[in-house]
Image 1 (spheres, rainbow, N blue to C red):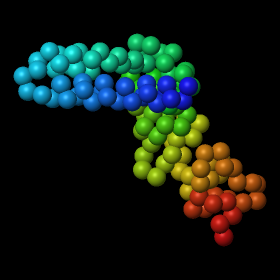
Image 2 (tube, one colour):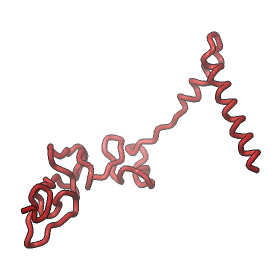
Image 3 (cartoon, rainbow, N blue to C red):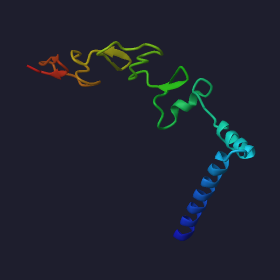
Length: 128
Protein backbone atom coordinates (compact mmCIF):
# COMPACT_ATOMS: atom_id res chain seq x y z
CA UNK A 1 0.00 0.00 0.00
CA UNK A 2 2.83 2.36 0.88
CA UNK A 3 4.48 1.54 -2.45
CA UNK A 4 1.30 2.53 -4.37
CA UNK A 5 1.04 5.80 -2.45
CA UNK A 6 4.65 6.71 -3.28
CA UNK A 7 4.14 5.71 -6.92
CA UNK A 8 1.04 7.92 -7.14
CA UNK A 9 2.88 10.90 -5.64
CA UNK A 10 5.77 10.43 -8.06
CA UNK A 11 3.35 10.29 -11.02
CA UNK A 12 1.64 13.52 -9.86
CA UNK A 13 5.01 15.25 -9.51
CA UNK A 14 6.06 14.20 -13.03
CA UNK A 15 2.73 15.38 -14.48
CA UNK A 16 3.10 18.75 -12.75
CA UNK A 17 6.61 19.21 -14.08
CA UNK A 18 5.51 18.23 -17.60
CA UNK A 19 2.67 20.76 -17.58
CA UNK A 20 5.03 23.48 -16.34
CA UNK A 21 7.62 22.73 -19.03
CA UNK A 22 4.99 22.65 -21.79
CA UNK A 23 3.49 25.94 -20.65
CA UNK A 24 6.87 27.67 -20.62
CA UNK A 25 8.11 26.39 -23.99
CA UNK A 26 7.83 29.03 -26.75
CA UNK A 27 5.20 28.50 -29.44
CA UNK A 28 2.99 26.18 -27.41
CA UNK A 29 -0.16 28.29 -27.30
CA UNK A 30 -2.50 25.41 -26.44
CA UNK A 31 -0.64 24.64 -23.20
CA UNK A 32 -0.68 28.33 -22.27
CA UNK A 33 -4.47 28.43 -22.77
CA UNK A 34 -4.95 25.40 -20.52
CA UNK A 35 -2.76 26.94 -17.81
CA UNK A 36 -4.54 30.33 -17.96
CA UNK A 37 -7.99 28.72 -17.91
CA UNK A 38 -7.03 26.68 -14.85
CA UNK A 39 -5.75 29.73 -12.97
CA UNK A 40 -8.71 31.93 -13.88
CA UNK A 41 -11.30 29.47 -12.54
CA UNK A 42 -10.41 30.24 -8.93
CA UNK A 43 -13.57 31.05 -7.00
CA UNK A 44 -13.49 33.82 -4.40
CA UNK A 45 -16.23 33.74 -1.79
CA UNK A 46 -16.79 37.02 0.07
CA UNK A 47 -19.01 37.65 3.07
CA UNK A 48 -20.99 40.45 1.40
CA UNK A 49 -22.59 37.86 -0.91
CA UNK A 50 -22.32 34.84 1.42
CA UNK A 51 -22.60 36.06 5.06
CA UNK A 52 -22.43 32.52 6.47
CA UNK A 53 -18.80 32.23 5.37
CA UNK A 54 -17.85 34.24 8.50
CA UNK A 55 -19.30 31.51 10.73
CA UNK A 56 -16.98 28.81 9.36
CA UNK A 57 -14.35 27.46 11.75
CA UNK A 58 -11.07 29.33 11.30
CA UNK A 59 -12.72 32.57 10.17
CA UNK A 60 -11.32 35.84 11.52
CA UNK A 61 -14.70 36.69 13.02
CA UNK A 62 -18.45 36.40 12.62
CA UNK A 63 -19.07 39.95 11.34
CA UNK A 64 -18.63 41.21 7.76
CA UNK A 65 -16.93 44.55 7.02
CA UNK A 66 -15.89 45.56 3.50
CA UNK A 67 -16.04 41.98 2.18
CA UNK A 68 -13.89 40.65 5.07
CA UNK A 69 -14.80 38.64 8.13
CA UNK A 70 -13.88 40.47 11.34
CA UNK A 71 -14.55 40.31 15.07
CA UNK A 72 -16.12 43.65 16.04
CA UNK A 73 -15.31 43.11 19.72
CA UNK A 74 -11.53 42.77 19.24
CA UNK A 75 -10.57 44.17 15.80
CA UNK A 76 -8.71 47.48 16.20
CA UNK A 77 -9.68 48.57 12.67
CA UNK A 78 -13.39 47.76 13.17
CA UNK A 79 -14.00 48.24 16.89
CA UNK A 80 -17.67 47.92 17.74
CA UNK A 81 -18.73 48.78 14.17
CA UNK A 82 -17.29 48.65 10.67
CA UNK A 83 -14.66 51.31 9.99
CA UNK A 84 -14.22 52.51 13.60
CA UNK A 85 -10.46 52.48 14.10
CA UNK A 86 -8.82 52.70 17.52
CA UNK A 87 -6.32 55.52 17.89
CA UNK A 88 -2.62 54.96 18.57
CA UNK A 89 -1.95 53.21 21.87
CA UNK A 90 -5.48 51.89 22.26
CA UNK A 91 -6.80 48.37 21.74
CA UNK A 92 -10.29 47.05 21.05
CA UNK A 93 -11.87 45.25 24.01
CA UNK A 94 -15.54 44.29 24.06
CA UNK A 95 -16.18 46.59 21.08
CA UNK A 96 -14.69 49.70 22.73
CA UNK A 97 -11.33 51.38 22.23
CA UNK A 98 -9.46 51.41 25.54
CA UNK A 99 -6.01 52.38 26.77
CA UNK A 100 -4.52 49.18 28.23
CA UNK A 101 -1.95 51.20 30.19
CA UNK A 102 -4.57 52.82 32.43
CA UNK A 103 -7.91 51.02 32.05
CA UNK A 104 -8.95 49.22 35.27
CA UNK A 105 -11.07 46.59 33.42
CA UNK A 106 -8.50 45.89 30.68
CA UNK A 107 -5.12 46.48 32.31
CA UNK A 108 -2.37 45.42 29.90
CA UNK A 109 -4.75 43.24 27.87
CA UNK A 110 -8.45 42.69 27.33
CA UNK A 111 -10.30 41.30 30.35
CA UNK A 112 -7.46 41.78 32.86
CA UNK A 113 -9.33 43.51 35.71
CA UNK A 114 -7.43 45.04 38.63
CA UNK A 115 -8.84 44.32 42.10
CA UNK A 116 -10.44 47.00 44.29
CA UNK A 117 -7.29 48.04 46.18
CA UNK A 118 -5.01 48.32 43.13
CA UNK A 119 -4.94 50.59 40.12
CA UNK A 120 -3.74 50.13 36.54
CA UNK A 121 -0.46 51.95 35.88
CA UNK A 122 1.66 51.30 32.77
CA UNK A 123 -0.50 48.28 31.98
CA UNK A 124 0.13 46.58 35.33
CA UNK A 125 -2.06 46.32 38.40
CA UNK A 126 -0.43 47.78 41.55
CA UNK A 127 2.73 48.91 39.73
CA UNK A 128 4.07 51.02 42.59
